[in-house]
Length: 343
Image 1 (cartoon, rainbow, N blue to C red):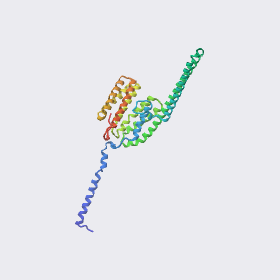
Image 2: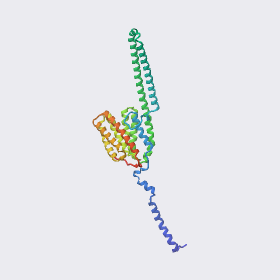
Image 3: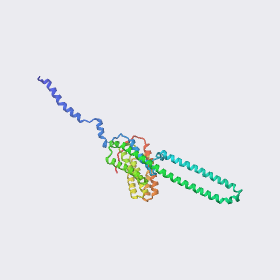
Image 4: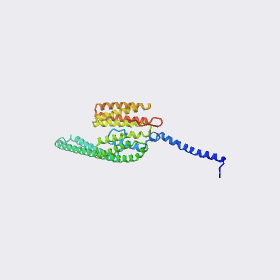
């Protein structure tokens, strides 16, 4: 069958147009694909901070608080187990019972002394003997109290480390749960490895049950927390957490007499704070000014190498950091994406 010009021209036109249409279709991107390409480093602008990351941060703070270190945690009873509370209540009851018995004995002694006026000659003969017996009794009771207190403190210390062991084990599970989320949020591989190494180091340090070393290891681990928070959308810049880290690290190193590292932490703190405070809203200026002054005072006592004041001023500064965080959380307005600040 021979095609006439009437049918041949339209057929040739179709053959030519089909490849052109296919090429133009392949070259176009879907709107969703374009939006994904615009996101820096693959980060999801609309993603909020995962609960697992918040739990990890809180666990670090709780370990520090359980060892009476400088922290921003608000209530110590958050970390106390029922066993510790029960032991404390039992010890308090014993103290009350002992105090009641002591008052009863004193009352009896006073009553005997009142009746002694009638038999002064007889009491004069037996007074020295009774006085000696009462003195020995009080000394024995005092020794028993001191022994109970010592045993109680030892039991408390064992309970605290038992609780810390439990917290660090839970933190490993939380980290394991959060790890895929960190990868999905395009967390740097070096950041992930550094945090994992620091977490393992803290675990090994806890085994030694050394308070100072454990506090420093906790602070070292917390140093990576702000970088993970910087991957997500938040009303508060992660830089405030970096400020928190440098305050605590400067204070801890001052307490241990590591003045060179403490001064280095203060320099990093002042640099981080200088970047952060310029972005603070007017509604939080009062809290920011209070924190600014406390950082200045902490810097002075560290420069003077005053260990006791470094501890006090460090705790005050951390308290002001917490106050600023609360103030910023209460500010009106939508959450914004805050990129990580480099140091």
